[in-house]
Amino acid sequence: MSKVKTFSGSCHCGAVQFEIDTDLPELTTCDCSICARKNALMVKVHETSMRVLSGMESLTTYQFHTNTAQHYFCRVCGIYPFHRKRVTPDYFGVNVFCLENFDPTGIPVRATVSAGMK
Image 1: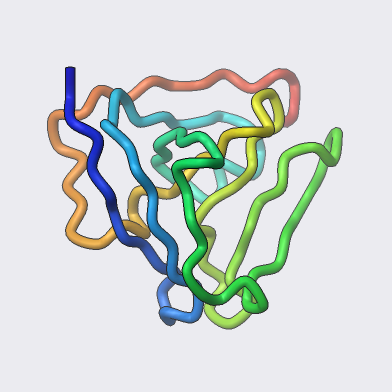
Image 2: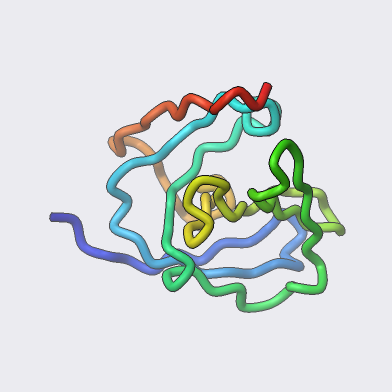
């Protein structure tokens, strides 16, 4: 079993700073219309394993389809750091490309098939 580590992350401009705790069991992609366009590689973390340290006022959300998932973007630089998931709303999908000094090499990637949200 992998050890849980704390990773620091941010948007591009640094207005939004956050931390996650994860053992990185896998990374995911999604083929829904928004995920395909933003080309994010995500790790799923429970809401208790994620902390926004600063910049809540710099975040804006985008919702579509069922308006359940909340996709967060920095209103300053436009970067997508994370989203609250639609099917499991007590979890966040975190964009691993926003994590500091993170290397996804060797971590399994699972493709998630959307439920008709094209």
